[in-house]
Structures are given as structure tokens and as C-alpha cells.
Amino acid sequence: VKSISARLTIWYALTATATLAVLFVVGYYMLQNHMVKQLDQLNETQYKQLRTALGPNYASLTPEVINDRIRDTTESASTLFYIDMHGPMTNRFFKSSNLHGQSIPDIPGEHVFNADVPGIGLLRVREFILPPFEVIVATPLAPVADVMIGYVKVSAALIVVMLLVSIALGFGLSQMVLRPVRTIRDTANRIRSDNLKERIPVDAVKDEISELGRLLNQMFDRLETAFDQIRRFTADASHELKTPLSLVRLHAERLLMSSATDPLQKESLHVQLEELARVNQIIDELLFLSRADAQAIAIDAKPQGPAGFLHTFAQDASALADYHGRHFTYTHEGEGEVAFEEKRMRQVLLNLLANALNASPPEGRITLHSTLTGGMWRIAVEDEGPGLNPEQRRQLFERFVRFGVPSASDKGSGLGLAICRSIVQLHKGRIFALGGENGRGLRMVIEIPA
Amino acid sequence: VQVNGEAIDLTSREYALLEIFMQNPGRILTRTLISEKIWASHYDVDTNLLDVYMSRLRSKLETTPGKPLFKTVRGVGYQLL
Image (cartoon, rainbow over all chains, first blue to last red; front, side, top):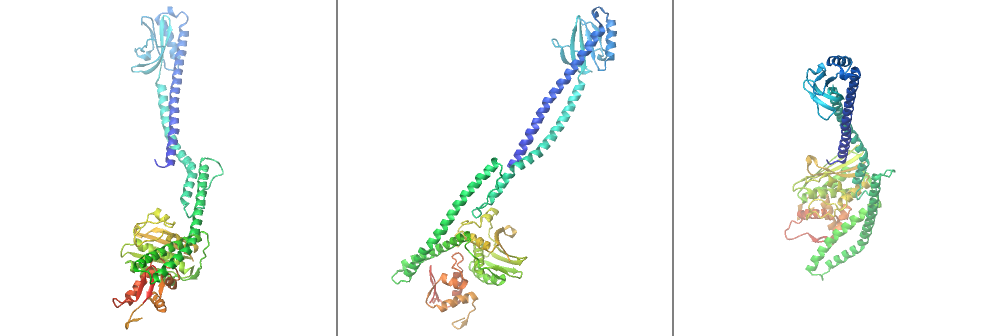
């Protein structure tokens, strides 16, 4: 069984029910023993009455007198007794009529025992010596057996009830015990590289689980410190690299223009300049992200209708899609204005488009749906590519996260979507990925409050 | 725009691009410079949108085989010859 909750419930129910069952078994033997002892006492009382009835000189009485006296005594008894009295040579002096002529079997050496008499059933027998006679007094065991059957039935019913009750109790208890564990799980799942501020709520009460929460929080503290150091380092390093990089670029360009450079050298200068452009872009992206982290970026948002912006963007998007052998279409619905910075939003949409172009099969369709309703501008960019699983869709916006096989046409730094998210968040909006319709493709959704 | 007396339709983007070259004949224009003039943003390595428009402009204007109008300066930008 996978869940701890189910395991706890099963263990609890089994132990509780097994304990009750053992108690019932012990109770069974104690009750039986007690009832049989009472029968033994009854037998003894009956014998004492017999002896009193026979008087002190019983040995000289004739069998007829004995018979009469015993019958008087036994007939007044409320309980059913079987009495068998015989002399040393087994000559019978008395045998109760309810034995119907049968004898109670004797077990040599035993004075108290159980005996089975055919037609009468199981009897509790007690043997008394009244020299020269031997008196056997017996009582039926059937009432005891009846009580014990009743006891077993009641016990079985109670065990079933106990099983059900303990399953319910065990489930309730396990839910109670595991609640803080669930909180820890949910919080830990939410804490990602871009959300390191959150902490697990810890109870003031000191127990094993709050201790675990505290330890995890300390770990998150250390991680956050380490992350902040890395971020600061990245920001500083990118900043420091900017100036030398533009100098390198400047000199390479100058060499390229010089007539003294031969074609082979020019070729390697071209490659250098191309790669420098890439490095430059990565540094710009890193700088942007570290400034966004430090909340040092202001958005120059102007209220405007998105239709015009989308129309201009669609021109570039169609040109780009045609060039890559894909198709781009867009729709826009809704009137009104929304505040956004055109340049930044264009960057976001271009990035989503570039990703969609990379993911799309040849001749694939990329669609952009824009709606402005209910105070919300919603843009969805959908492609017909292979799509991503839910876990990948959650990680998509983290830095340097890349999915799919890197190809010649896809040389992104893995920062594009992190930047998109920063820009959208600067517009107080949110961006997220969904599965495409019909279970294929990827649908990137941006929501910006108007 | 007319090429060899023939009228050619250009989109607004293509026209803006051509305009920049006409204003700076013979000069090598960097990608960054062109991008900033047209899109008000730095050149984006990932989308190579500028290269896309250059190839469209060339296919429309360079009608004479063996006589290119534009020169690609790799790693730097483009030049109107």
C-alpha cells in the first residue's frame, strides 16, 4: 500500500481488532470454567442432600428404603440431576429414572469429569465415595454449551463492529497526524528558484514534525542566501563584462574594415563577431533578469488599444513564419484600452513566436488569440508541436530550463521565457503554459489586467 | 518603388528598411543600428527577424542576376552597394 495514511489505518484497525479478539478468547475460557465450576458445586450440594436424606446408618438400609429416600430428595430438586448409586460389586442400589436404564460411564482415577451418555448428551459428573457405596451425581452440560454459543455469536458481531469502528478511527487519526506533513509537501512543492522567500508554517509546539519543518526552513534559508549570492555575482559579472566586450567588438570591426586583413582572417573575424553578438545578448538578458530581481526596472506603460499593436506585430510574425515555412494567424476581440509598453510586449510575443516556430512541424500553424473583456487582456499563442507534460510546463519559466533537442535553428539561451515572465509580471499580469486543444501542442497564455 | 522602370510593392517594414539604406548609401549598417531604427529594440539573435526582412527585400529588388544590391557583412550588418 503506497499511502502512509492507508497503512496507519490498516495497522490500527488490525491491532485494535486483534486485541479485542484475544480478550474475547480469554473471556471464553474464563466464562466456561466458571460455569462448569458452578455445576460441580450444584452436584456437591445435591450429594450432601442425599447423604442427609439417607441418615447416618445408611449402610444397613435395604435397597427399597434407599430408593424411596433418594427419590423424595431428587424430586424436590429444581435442577435436573442424574444419580447412579452402586455398591462395591456394581450391584445397583439406585439409578434415577431419567437415565432410562443406562449407566454413566466411569473414568477410573477421576472424580470430576465430563461423560457422554447416548440419548442424554454430555454430562458433568462428580463421583463421591460413601462407603461401601459409590455415588455418582451428574448434571447436563447443554446449558453451558448454549451460553457459550451465544457468547461466540455476540463476540463475532462485536469484532466486526470493532473492525469497522477502528478503520474509521484509524483513518481519522492518520489524517490528523499527516496534516502537517501535507502542508510541508505542498509548501516544498511551491518553493522554486524564483520563489525562495516562502517558508513552511511551523507550529509553536515542539514535536517531530515541527522539528522537520524548522530544519527544512533552515535549509531554504541557506539556499536562498546561496541563490542571492549567485544572482549578485551574475549581475556584477554581466555588468563588468559589458565594457570589455564592446571594446573587443569595436576592434574586430575595425580589423574587418582594414584592407591589410586577408580573407582567411576576415572569415574568422566574421565568426568572432557573430559569437560576440550572441554573448552580448546573453549578457543583456542576464542583466535584465538581475535588474528585474532587484525591482530596478520600470515599465513605460501607455494605455492603448491592443488592436494596432497586434496588427503591427502580426506583420513581423507572418514574415518570420513564412521564412520558416510555417503559418501564422491571429484574431483579436474586444474594445477598450490596456496599459502596456509596446516594445516589451513585442519582445514577449516574439519570444513566444520563436519558441512556437521551433516546436512546430513544417507547414504547422501558429495561432494567436487575443481578447479584451471584463478588464482582462488575454493573449494565447498556440502551436502544433509535440507539447510538454504538466511538470515541464511548470518548470518552463525558470532560468536556463530548456526542453527538446537543441537544433541548429534553436540557439536560445534558456532565459527567454524567464524574461517573458518578468516582463508580464512588471505589467502586473501572469503568464502560464497549458496543453493545446485536442491534447497536442502547447498553449502559452498571458493575462494582463486592463 | 520602381526597379528598372517596374513597380514593386513593398510592405511598410520593407519600405522602412530600404529607406534606412538609401539614407546611408555605401555605409555598413550594423544589425543593432537597423533594429533600433525599425523596431526600437536591440537586435535579437534568436529570431533573426532582420535577416528575414533582408531576404525578402533582396528577392524583390535584386532582379538582375549577378548584380547584388546589398552586401551582407557577416557578424556586423548590411551595406547598400
